[in-house]
Length: 267
Image (tube, rainbow, N blue to C red; front, side, top):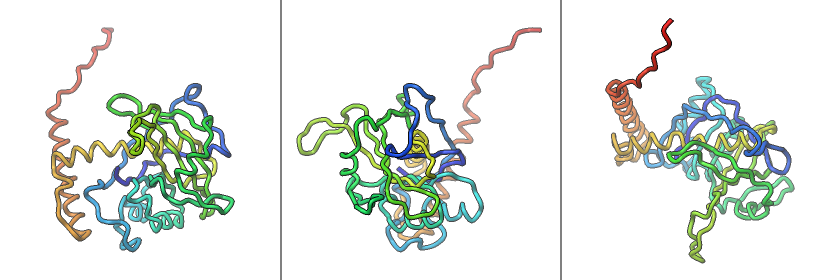
């Protein structure tokens, strides 16, 4: 999954221990958001070096803030989520984020203790999980069971939470037993205190909206077919690929016939 900036839509979140959220069976589905852009996993430089090396760091958050571009969240996968220097920069500048993190990531709790993400998942009660659809996939809504745990916060005005995503059915083989188990994923969230669980789910699901276009770009214009060592070279290659995709999409839109319109009733 790539890193991206979420569009300016009021997306919020809250932990299961302190805030309430509407059940999926009784309330409306979370609103959908669009227009996210991101660099792909295979076409970006290493982000674990000194942070930030310059103003052109992944996701364009620095440039977006300097240009006063409105956005709600910085979204990224584990490659960025486990970069503590990146997280510290975002928190220092009051940037809300939803970052995927590994199961062994150590997180601080409000009482001063630390626990790994998988240890916190084991402590979450079953009734704390709620079923929500985070995005629409090729086969319909992407429904998962979700829960959130409040963590220690380091910035004024914003809070940190661990968002836990669990598949609704066993779909992953356990390496030790060989049995099918439910897949678990973890997200570190930096949000407003009044954010609800449903809104956190929406933010986490927005990364899927840019994954498909990047997969298409890899196959059509060779977005991931580069051998570069410097950021400038990577940037030039990615920019040319994006321009090529714009041309292909424009040509396709012109060649695709418009859907037939239903004639209105005669006066």
